[in-house]
Length: 434
Ligand code: URA
Image (cartoon, rainbow, N blue to C red; front, side, top):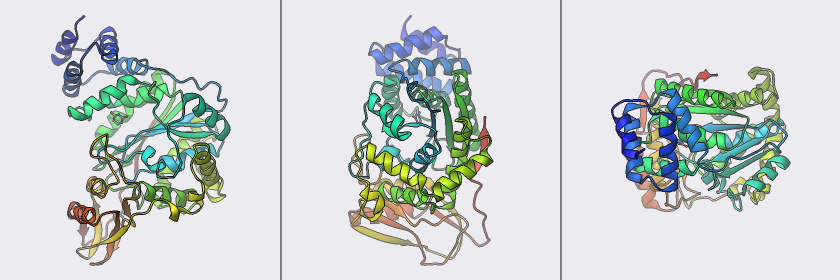
């Protein structure tokens, strides 16, 4: 078998056999198949797609390209959550300890921010001392003792995706449903959880720009997981405006702490409860989502979820005095409000432009090797539907350099839209796929 025969077959719109897909992924992981042939195959898949059988085999062969974690020594139900990525998406920081405080184990392997979307690991690292690099055995030990652990992907897990994702990033082949599905699901299946709840985001600030595309992606991933005998649910959420009122790293940790103490913004609380409820149902800690929501709300109001967060941070080497005094978390030298140019009802907040402004401020990366500034970002962000007066602040910019603030203001110039008429906030949770 030659790699170019397989590329040719996909180029001409035919389906690949399991043997051909396994040959390609094995060869690419070991270095026998070079980047240029993998890039060519990725581009043919981008244009010609894959059927469900092909995506399942692709996922399985990527999952088997490295180690698969065995979490059977953790006796609780193990349920994870994965988000396809958004702006201001700090749900994992609240959800992992919240669900763990209900008696479910949450093994969470997360990513770093790249492009406009933020990353959970960068947010957690703004807590001084917090290490995201635990060995698999330490990860399992923290899961057993604490019930949740939030780490980075270990190098042994899914090396095929590590190479392929970097290649897709520079060959314009990221937004392909079969490739995204296999990339996400291979990692999640290798992580060893029994069940998985997916937060599939759609809109300006997400990979999937339309609800229709997001539905196809969600259905594909749910079916792959079920085929691999995992409990699966996907929740489709609107990412046309950022989640919560902060975007960045330390600023999002502060908002997560408020939420864990029962004082979070409505949209963040709504999504966290919706995802958490499905995790509790899949983990058999509640009979139905309504009962689960009641359990979760009690854990927030009693402080149990916040205590669990502190416990997890401590297991990871983080200094919990920063959680008790969030004002001590990294804070930028310059904080400037951004005034509204006019009166009206806020009809649009372009999540993509907010994400770009955060990169300019230093809170995100332009390339994989960029260093990020944990203190930079945006706070006090207004929301769609609010009535705004000319000159009123739409958000506060945080940076360590005045030039960055000026540059971010330029990016923000087209981010807001206004209407004379009252506007209802957009529906946040649009579909549940089981
Ligand atoms: N997240 C991933 O892990 N992979 C993709 O392809 C897209 C988003």
